[in-house]
Length: 77
Image (cartoon, rainbow, N blue to C red; front, side, top):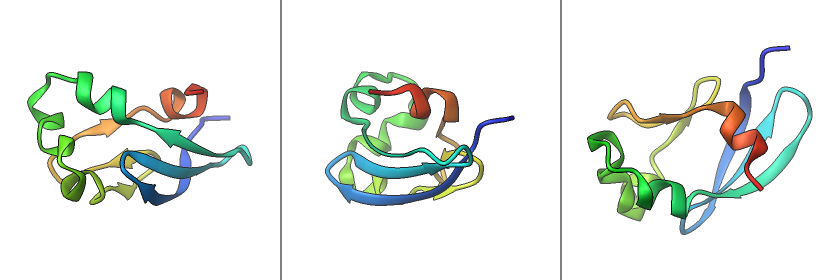
């Protein structure tokens, strides 16, 4: 099975509740991931108002082109 995100809801700060096509649901805190990224796509996401503007297209995607692999989100503790 190819893993992908089926639903995601913003919780607070950098936390998102994510549902996957294998049935797993979890809350993922992406603060350290977003803060550590130096790529220009992730710079605006350091602002909570921009971070909250994600949508689901098999993973989390932002309008500026930033995305995070569903495998990373799934395995994130």
